[in-house]
Amino acid sequence: MSSQIVVLGGSGEGLLDRLRAVRADGDVPLVGNDRWPAAHWDAVRELAASRPVPAEAGWATLTSGTSGTPRIVLRSAASWERSFEAVSALLASPGGADAEQRILLPSPPASSLTLFSLAHALGGGPRPVLPDSADRAEATVLHGTPQALSAVLAAGDLPHLRTALIGGSHLPAGLRAEAEYRGVRVVSYYGAAELSFVALDTGDGHRAFPGAEVEIREGELWVRSPYMALGYLGGPGPVRTAGDWMSVGDLATLEDGVLTVHGRRDAAILTASATVIPDEVEAGLRTLPGIADAVVLGLPTDGIGALVAAMIEPEPGAAVPTARALRSLAATRFTSSHRPRIWFEGPVPRTATGKPARAEALRRVKAGEVRRCA
Image (cartoon, rainbow, N blue to C red):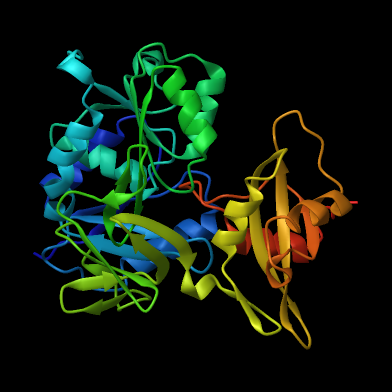
């Protein structure tokens, strides 16, 4: 009998046992998000049942990137298992002091970030602690987004936390410094649902994850590793392959072994005669005083293609800057073509893994659900 995708609810209670049972039956688990509307659940279940599942598939995850329609990504069990040893070494406390590691997983189990750690637990990794667990305060490690790390530090309620593995989106240097000042070692990483782990940053820039190779071809990042996914259910999807190399379309540079990722090529904003990469402008905006985060989007405009706009999330307790102040600050960071022309107030919408959700931000702007900065 061929295997099938089994769509599971995202409730944390008994989730690890349910995952273990599906895997033991030879089927492929896919975890949903309990906050989805009923129509979305129906669409995911229909998609999961619409195509045959390759025999080598062991796990399924959903990806929506920062825009676009979610897709089901299939991977073999081995593609994650091969990275368990390296990840365990990263999470280990200095001196091996932990009798039992407990890993806090703040992101929903529908996120590939959290599902990886649940798979790791089934393979002998740290015991998972979901946000509503009674033993949350016993967590010794954290696997989550920068926003999750910031919330944990603000709450100050994890006295045993020693290591944080951070992915999903940009990690501000100040957040790393604050965590390490409090005795929490931070390892951030770059990866993708299709690629898994690609590069690690322990404080001196992102360098290739053990066993992964990276190349830059015409400004685009290509990866070869034993951790890559099989592909998408029912079709090739947006990733491209060349032999045993794969690219998800991220623009990047590589200098002295340090990888810098600039965002997806297909997210570029074409404005007048310029091409603007939102990630690059977002990174610059985060360096401006009083701004905690930002999402940059292109507003379709006759004659020039799109107008660069930004949604700003101020630092906690800080007032939203005026449009005039933001324009003045942006002039110190960006060339004319890359400066946002319209400014909106946040908070910044995010995907389950903490990335700016550009499609949702654009929808809110078009629907008039956010205010323009005065």
